[in-house]
Image 1 (tube, rainbow, N blue to C red):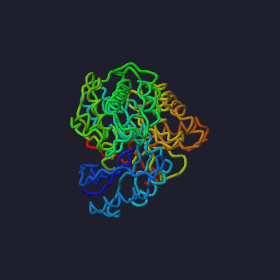
Image 2: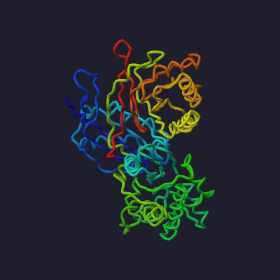
Image 3: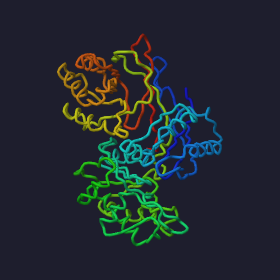
Image 4: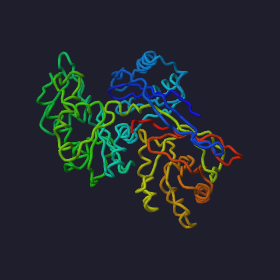
Length: 476
């Protein structure tokens, strides 16, 4: 039996706000004698909105009413009503996520558009979303190589590294096309981001608000930005200015990166060569794209075409698959339903040894920090097959040691395991914690970074739980 559902993806970025509707076809792929397993079997984008500039009241406040007007307008153009939409995602990204009323805008939009995945994507999570939207994960799997995606938007450049389809590392830099804003008619500069001003000064260029934009000066600044991106992916030695430009952190040095893809609004001017009107968007995005296309990023790495550029972070659309957990699970209290938990998935490399598991959870859990605030996450691991008692004890200890900040806040430990060990692992964790925190440990579920998960109330006399995996749908 097949069912077709309508899904929406809404992305409110530093520069642009856009929306995509998709038809998602789901089907029960199990036999009539088996536990139902509902999977996505097809997806089709049926409507892509116009790309709108994100409306702001001030440099620090989103115009929530105008954003809602944009979304309502695009619903009308698509001939869709909110009640038609069954699932989706509303995400605020980039510099816009730092605006003072970002969460308020998100909640208002979600209330209008439906009960969706609602998240302000921090820079690390946005990097993953954009990289998957660009198809870099798929290229890394097909080529069995390290592939980096740089999503160059209006306010930030989000970097993600993939290997064999899995997320290896992420970073973010304050480099973007709208960090200098220019009146397209008068060519007067009316906004300069403070870090960009420092970058300009470091190369001997003075730039001020009110000046007429000097193309030669702007090009030199854009070239310096491109060189910082070279440093970010280790094709150029890192400098103190690189450290200054970091948003939160960069990817580690020393990876043997072979391929690179570009996404974000600036990417169109990396892949294309239409530079006739450099200030037509009222910013430096076109010039930045041109300088990236001339840089060592494309000379020293092999450039691959991105599946999506400016629309990579629009999430395609939020979709869902519904699974039933394995029957060997642990939950210490019926604290269900649990909704919209972001997934932190460890890669195969992360699970090479128990110390690595501990270190990688501790490191990657920071992906989900928002303005130094810790949010509840579900940690996903493959887990061992048929582990010994000692191995279970050591794995449980590694998981506990990897999340001290969450435990301090008395968040429950939520663990998603592919292999069939959730009952013994969950019980061991609960015992090692002296029953101080609730534990939910379920198995036979496969998730990815960038997914969100809902866990419903237990079924079959408490033996299994229904799981909704809200996958961000990409062309890859």
